[in-house]
Amino acid sequence: MGASVSSMQILGVPEDTVRAALPGALVGTWSKRFVTACLGPDFMETERKARSLSKKLQCTVLAVSLIDGDTLRLMLYQSGKNLTYHIALPKYGTHKAGNSALFCSVLGLPEALAPKLKRLFAVCPSQEEKLSILQALLGAPLFIRYGAEEDGYLPQEPVKADSGPLEEWAREHPEAPKIKNQCRAELIQEIPDLFFHGDIGGRVFLLRPLAIAGEEEASWGGKAGEVIGVETSGGKLAYPLPDGHLELTQLEDPPISQALEDYLFDGKSVSFDHFSYAFLDGRLVIAADFFEECDYQSYSPYQTVLLHDTAGILPCYLPLTLEGRPVIARHFYLLPDGGFLVSTAGAAWARYGPDGTLLYTAGSDAGLRDGDAAGLRAIQKLKQQIGYSTPVVDSQGRLWQYHEKYFECYFPKQKLISRHRLPGCACALYLNDIGQACAITSQDKKHLTRVYRFSCSKSKK
Image (cartoon, rainbow, N blue to C red; front, side, top):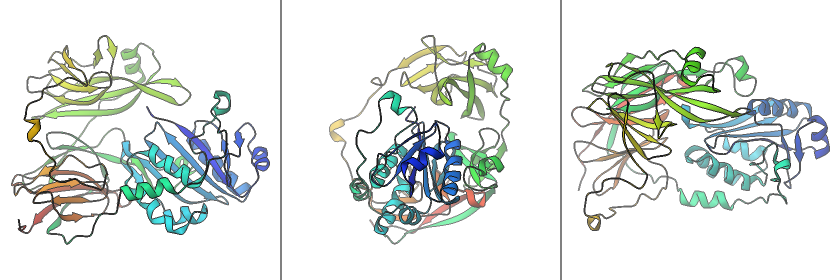
């Protein structure tokens, strides 16, 4: 679990005015330009108050929320209006970059920084790193939280504004070079109202229903009817056909009730978080992750429970344990013998038999290694320093990768020969039965998941 912080950064009014408008809040000036206010850990309440405060005081307010280190919300308000916002919620496939030029002009940043800020918002995978760079850029304490005064974590001096971290990040993550594409992307399928949610193994994908904002969600940012994420249950399994099209099968998730939680955890304060799946040769196993409530609106991973096995091999319900302690399965895979393999936080891997008993574990330093280390060498370094997917190699030996916004093809000797920026978010790559690369994208604004098939001209070696 990463850091969780929530604050308001206020421009245009003095500290005393803010303090009077927000009784009980932590209010102070730890910046040359901003007054900072913290209400508590509830980011929804922070955003509601930020909007109303900007209207009441006719000022500019930036609401900043980092949740568990991997979800970032930046909501920019002026005189009661939500001008723009940046939302990165990778867990549910949600990413809204926002208008970087508007962020710069309203928050008093140089216009020349807007393209670099746009790239940071678009491709930086670490939300904590992104917030750290933005903190330096604004010269405001964005990692401050309610209760910092009692804990002794208040800034001892104003945060200095410094564009250096953004400039350094931009140098290390240059824009992709322009190339003449040697491959062509053909749209072969459109799937409405479902969003790509993950690869569950064996070239089988999960498509989830979209989560749409209602009136309550719209009150703290965005508009009613906007896509705000992906549902945690329901949806369809997508199986690639020989030509690359996806065949959809309705998924029925087991119901999660309070009675089930009480049965599994004997009244312990544990709540359902999300389902996960493993698939092998037509067999599907469904598991659920449960989180333990630690304090107000704070949860930590507690235990994974296997709920259903379509083959009837594993005993369900099966709470996973390791050395007598409950564990969360970060990844889990079915094995041909009927058992399964999981990766956990405490041990790198644990193998369970078909009856659910733990057979053995391999720690983070254990494993099998085979090969001539001296013979391994780097062919070429990819200098963009961004997170790439697991690659696939097509029938002609071309290597395919994808990042959040585009798909790339390398051949030969890792020379980039084609890049495709397709509508929506890049989600997955796989091969059809004749070895052609196929791609999945999801576009939440149009409520569409799309499937593409790539064809390439012969490349000169």
